[in-house]
Length: 128
Image 1 (cartoon, rainbow, N blue to C red):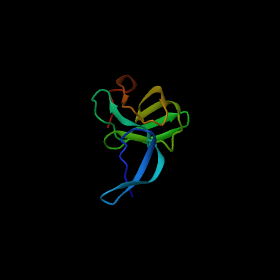
Image 2: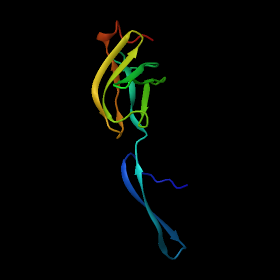
Image 3: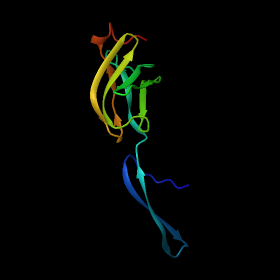
Image 4: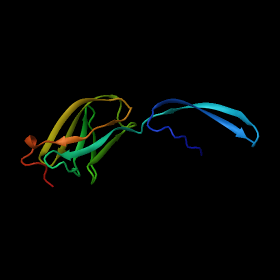
């Protein structure tokens, strides 16, 4: 296995393999590959009043109803394979608090968004 570090640069890349016997290099083969982001959308859900991460918040994309739940650090992610490119409104909810943001263009290039649960939509911030 050969790893090719391309960083976070989607697109087409060429790879060249060379044989090296110590005194000469010779081209063996050339091939191309496509680099795609595995994550279409990710980020954190934060309580606007405390700026702390919100665990177990639901993050839903509409249209389509794609949904996930945040982890202990308030982080969420949607994989490129699961979310087709398009414009999405993002609904974030935790207990009796919710917020709608967007629309945002999710195009497979990897979008990172911090989402906030705002005080006006909650009695006194997000309850834990």
